[in-house]
Amino acid sequence: MDHPAPTAGPSGSSAAPPPLRERLTIPVLAFGGILMAVMQTVVVPLLPDLPKLTHSSAGAVSWMVTATLLAGAVLTPVLGRAGDMYGKRRVLTGALALMTVGSVMCALSSDIAVLIVARALQGAAASVVPLSISILRDELPPERRGSAVALMSSTVGIGAALGLPLAALVVQYYDWHTMFWLTSLLGALGVAAVWWAVRESPVREPGRFDVLGALGLAVGLTCLLLGVSQGGQWGWGSPRVLGLFAATVVVLALWWWQQLWTEQPLVDLHLVSRPRVGLSHVAALLTGFAFYANSLVTAQLVQAPKATGYGLGLSIVATGLCLLPGGITMLLFSPLSARISASRGPRITLALGAGVIACGYVVRVADSRDLWMIILGATVVATGTTLAYSALPTLILRAVPASQTASANGVNVLMRTIGQATSSAAVAAVLTHHTSLVGGAQVPTLHGYLLSFTMAGVIALVAGAAALSIPGDKATDDAPRATARPQGARDDALEGA
Image (tube, rainbow, N blue to C red; front, side):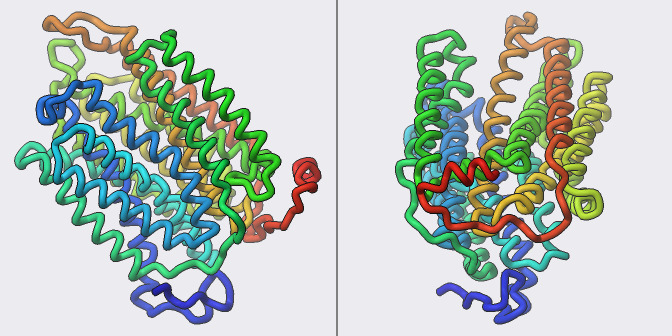
């Protein structure tokens, strides 16, 4: 049964929950965010061995990553909208439950088809962060909101940094199913903790769910991300990839038109068209691109054979430990991001974060041979990512009405996901183009890695420029109010935006 809704506003000044539950709301939501990132990361150490373990091809195994990416991209805005309409805690609990069910399926099976379906279910957890941020907006007073949102945003990097060495240790010393039993237990704990410690938000946007819009977005995003993620394997000029991109353009164009003329759309495109919202989404996409290249390239670089002349030949466990300082840094720097946003505004924090990311890549280009310099560069990039990722939700919170917080943040997370997928494809294309023969195998050259770092650094600078172009934000809680618009007034609303 839901906890009684407060009657005196989102800060919960009246009918407050018991003190212990109130104190645990932020830690429980942060635990859910970390758990989501861990779930996405734990499969990485398994990928080289899964073809043998599941008696399947490497191409089939790659779908364990692709399925999670596609499901997360599609479900994040859909579940965000559902949370705004039907209750954020209810939808958040359901997303964590789907993630846990997927983990149990992975623990029970070695069949690749079952594993792919299970990983798709786990993709639902991508909505955990935007839903949690929306709950924090509804439940916390303004003076506590900034630091809590910053911490929630940082959980993505913290969980990723923790998940890789944890999974590597489990895989190295135990049966690989043990890892999924462990995450199943953690997932069940997360579901129970959210249901107990987090009360249901009273802020709702009633109406009818846009089923057609959800289906259109799902088809369009699936075509886009499938083409981006599989382009390197299928060939960028292959009929399949070109057909997917053509379908993306057609489907999303029709979806855009449908959203503009639907009275209660899945995504309020009139709101998205406002510079404060639209430019925040652009900055999220670019920051996602710049951030993802760091962990992606670092993992490959330090594991490269010593015979390459630059590789360190580290194990997957040691690789995870190299990325761990970045995760710790993200935890430590999230309060600083909140303070900067409170004093200077989140767009300045976002621009500063993008600049720090670019500086981190300067370190990576300057020296990618010594382990301590590699760790230093990766940690600097993680620090910049903390500042940027913590500022993005605050920008959205200040630009959208409270009744659309979860859906708007869901779109913002979607843009980060698209940026990360694009970054993965771009880095793969660069490294594939710059290879040399070492020990009878083609491996990327150091020049290819440095080009990848340079590309990510330039994108980070572009993200900073996009952040500075966002109209100035005021440190107030007077977010735009949702207004009921008759169907014939949608064009007037767009013109007014």
